[in-house]
Amino acid sequence: MKKSRSMPILMSFRGLYIFILFAILYSLFSSSALKAAEENTICIIITGLGGMPEYEENFLSWGLATEAHFQDELESVVYRLDGRHKKKSDILQLFEQISSSPLPNELWLFLIGHASHDHRNYKFNISGPDLTDQDIKTFFDGLGETRTYLVAATSSSGTLASQLGHENRVIVTATKSATERQPPLFMSFFLEAITSEEADTDKNARVSLLEAFLFSHQKVAAWFEEKGRLQTEHATLQDNGQVLLEKKNILETDPGNQGTLLASMAYLSRATAQPYRTREARELASQGVELEREIEDLKFRKNQMPEDEYYRALEELLVKLAVLNESIAKMEGEL
Image 1 (cartoon, helix red, strand yellow):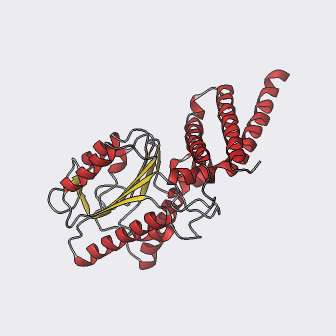
Image 2 (tube, rainbow, N blue to C red):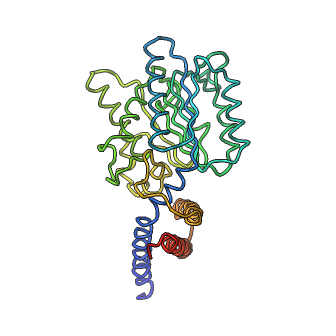
């Protein structure tokens, strides 16, 4: 009986040890590794038709602001297509160009405009034939291991979570269903979030996609409440094909979810660490990004594994990360 009671206690100490080791390594390594990842990021921004001049002005303004942020703040490779003039064939040509080239570590796709749903397909409204969910799915499916983030700031976008949700993807939609057809305000608050100290809830001087989503979700609800109007849009976030967030209180009731979400590691501002001076250190930093990805994947599978096996695997990955981090520090003259 004593042995059976002592096992959870021993495991809890081991778990605490692993947690402390992870926290130390992550604080030392993650900002630099994320800097390396930022150097290989593509952002595609597509603005669509609005039907009314004021809507199209908003869509274009939000698209230009997103373009400026990803170019200036994140130094990403950015493609912006104006759907008033660009055709579906132009968009598909860009998709093919990217998927047939060396793939990036991360790809962001922003859809900003009006969309509809005909009970079969999501349709993003542009000049000529619309861009559909099937077009986007085909593109995403060809991106391999690229971490992919879709922000669909359109009406009727809620169906995209079920259509496009997959491992290694985050799908953010401005509406929760195809029946929310009014032009959404979500993107205006999303752009506010990415430079807002209020949105940075963990106070690490960077705003993640998850933080931007939660900030925008709250601000949209507050706007409708202040105006005394029925809320016509409810944003959703699907993470890694597993977790669907529709309300902030999901994280409040299960806060352990937050640290394991891909959206919590996708940052919308630059790492504060200085770039590595040597090519060898940059290459090791890229390997570190892959190790961090393995750690996050392992955390997702924790409940599917025996506890001993989980902690052994986690410890092995953390030791590899420690060795790699020490090698980088030596190369950079920090040891």
